[in-house]
Amino acid sequence: MGEAMKPLACVLLGLSLVTASARAQAPGKPQAQESQTAAVKNNAASAISANDPTYKIGPQDMLRIDVWKEPEISRAVPVRPDGKISLPLLNDVQAAGLSPMELSKVIAEGLKNYINNPEVTVGVTEINSRSVYVAGEVTQQEAYQ
Image (tube, rainbow, N blue to C red; front, side, top):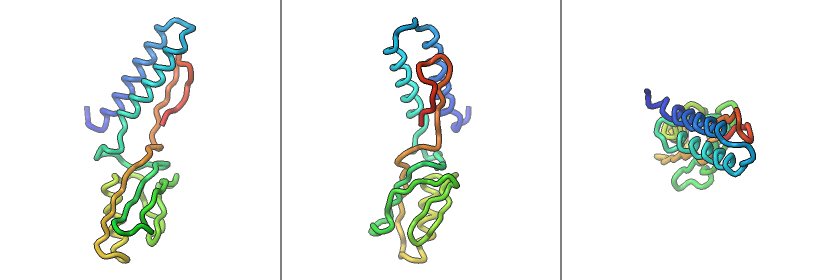
């Protein structure tokens, strides 16, 4: 199994375990169902991590852009639905589809016209572009970020 498929496999395994457990559970025990919902959230969070070097930024993610010694440019920005972010001096920059390291290089390259040797760090503070859908015999059928 490829490295890119492992997080998806973990989420699917977690969902199948929760679904099987929900079917076996006797009716009238909502506390157990709440713990199953929490298990799904934990499995989803562990399967998708912004610290993964292969993580690609997606629309609706929240990013923290830090430019060393340039507080006017450093800021938290959302990735718009079109996959771009807006930054001072650079206007719109394509972010979706890039890793945080790739995006930091793109931003640094653009800032070279205005700043000598810019040092740029990009961090993903919220992953909103990926969802896990819980369906079937569960208390609440919904999507979790």
